[in-house]
Image 1: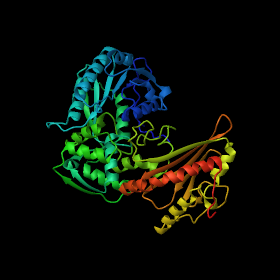
Image 2: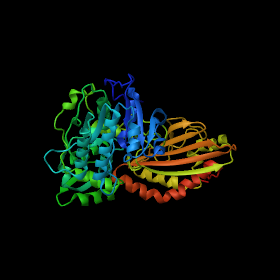
Image 3: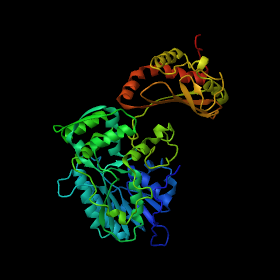
Image 4: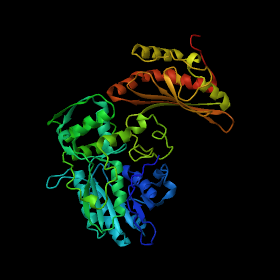
Length: 507
């Protein structure tokens, strides 16, 4: 379901009298990919500058935008992309560049400003980083600040929106917070966890970005944008744990842990790339609290107000909590809210997810294969490794779970929502999909899914997917403890449904 986060915002009109033509740079990035969608939904025409066009093909809006291929350092490509543009969104950064990213960002901003001025662009909108004044900034925040100054000096009216930690699945800052909190119930942390931060939900960042296009005044200034609350990083971890249903986290800050040591520690505990982690952590030594709320004079808050931290976290976790896994982990459709993961987000975004995927092709027709899929479990067993499932059922009963004692209501037919051993039938689409959600006792959420597709020669391709979303450190330990059993259980199960090999329970 689409969430209208830009309700009540005006629509900017271009020089030709039509809705403004907006150029979005950095469209493959976290904010850019979501911004394009919101601009289109609000009625704007959108052009995208991309270095690698093939990276855009997984976005559902791919066919709805004009695309110019080119590099941020290529002045000719920038000039071509800015031709006839009314509003240009500058979302470029070089955080993942190992060497002198500051000089590279300086060159990019200079080139972009010059080309925008020459093309007669009416407005540049730049998403920068919130930072303290009159203090030494990290290289990352200092470069963000300099980029804003360069764009404002270009001669094109520029609105710079300066944000701190953005809360939403896929945001590098949020993912670092997520992994640290979920994986470490007890933490000895650097001193920067006591620095004050004003986080903001991604949905509110996008509202400000879209709203900036429709501001009537010709502004050439920066604005701080933040959510309704101010926390320390330590408080954010505690709040995240509560929102995610984790046990209380114990956090002990120590002054001896430097940013360099901290980034190594984060690199060890989380999948966030160490170069990115180091620059984000280096910036956390600076307080990021909005200087004022003057942005509200031009872009009013939504009727319900800005998003609280707890709600922003809950929105980011909604898809997992509702067990709606198909959009997050396939290239199916664009999710309804900007807080949810996109299939195009980095592999390390969206939280921990473990999968075991097996495929098998058979000459049997899909109807025959489906009968085997739908009759799985109960007295029919699971495969030649049914004994392993029986052992898991016994373990579940010993810790107070249901085990395998519920069996099946019918040996051959299932109904959506009914119990099957220690599973619940979550989705049933004959003869193509069966998804079972685990109801056994475990530190996380698990699903077992079967997909059947008819092949061109009349046979069937079976895809079996086991999915596990761990909860906390125990969830991580649980997955790697049971992982060796997967080599016994899952291969025989997919062969059973594809080819019909079976040993019934007790036989």
